[in-house]
Image (cartoon, rainbow, N blue to C red; front, side, top):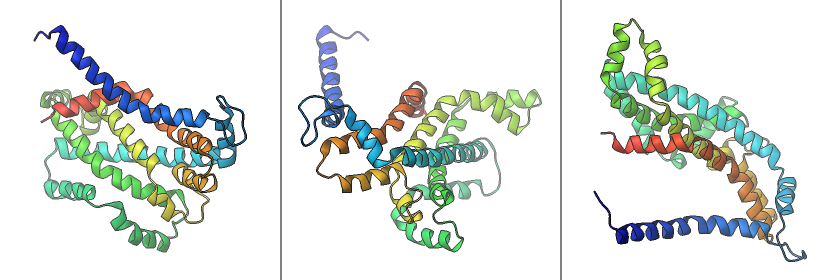
Length: 268
């Protein structure tokens, strides 16, 4: 279909308008982070990032967040792939009921389960541990991951698994050598989403680690905000520091992420 020059120009102007709306808040935070603090001379002050990093002890809290995120992403991907493979390619008794139980996990808000979950974990002696922070988020991520990977495996041509079976490949070999290489965009998209949800989670780390020894980056940002409510430059610098890992992960996996989202949009 041919597009006229006027229509192309209008499309570009609309896209440019949305781009400005999307980048304006980001530019505002960056400008604020570089602005002078009280008593400083006018001009850009990149040392605000160093000061925020030092005062907020973000090296320690970013390390905790990274460790929790790696545990959650790895465990959630493994469980989602195995369960999605079973639901998407196999027929077994009770599959529909079990699958809907997984989907039920998508409908339960964190606020509804976090209090009884805290008492259960405390009874088991797991509070103030990485397990107390990671396990609930793994369970939440698997609920969506099973749905995502089941859809991915069902969308692949059935001839792939039939050809692997004719060649003598077992279920695990078929999954590892045939289906997973064809599902890399979907895996990358799921990894980015789970990483982002885990990194931004606030309520579970707050309640499951009350001693504060395993404070994550969003928690440390909230406490930092309480100490420096008058210094907007430091707050903006701290917000950029906490958000930077998500941006880096997205930039690294953006090609697979966009491809996975587009493929997901075209699936039936």
